Length: 165
Image (cartoon, helix red, strand yellow):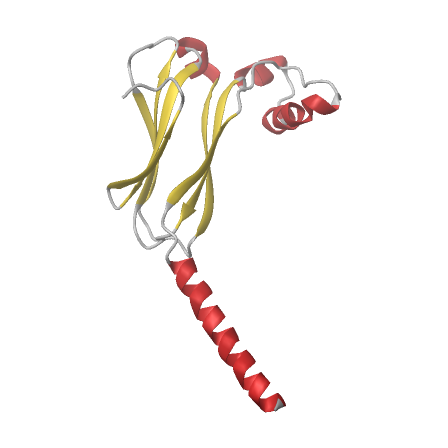
């Protein structure tokens, strides 16, 4: 009787493994999250517990900037994008379209391209940075849209509330 349970257990385990394997393969490339974290001040926020996320972000961005000039050049807009790469054998492009205060209606573009195959499917992280001289001349980011292309085809997109098509 115990052999029957063992056989049934192995059969169920095999079926579960195959099901999970098929579900894992079925995941498509998509954007998981876009986080806009601006840095507006060269001073690190107080130790107040409510400000701890802003404090951690400021410490991360300002790490190693010793002079006031270096710290000031790091002020700006930081966009952290997390996306799932479900087709690592195909070329991928992560594109950000945006407008800035100094250019108002002119849509600008910045992109990351991965033309070579990646090792495996998985979560990827990218960062768009707007600071230094570019931010000083053209101003803060007003609106943005992030597009994810796989093999030249748009598969996912996220945008700010004020973005107009």
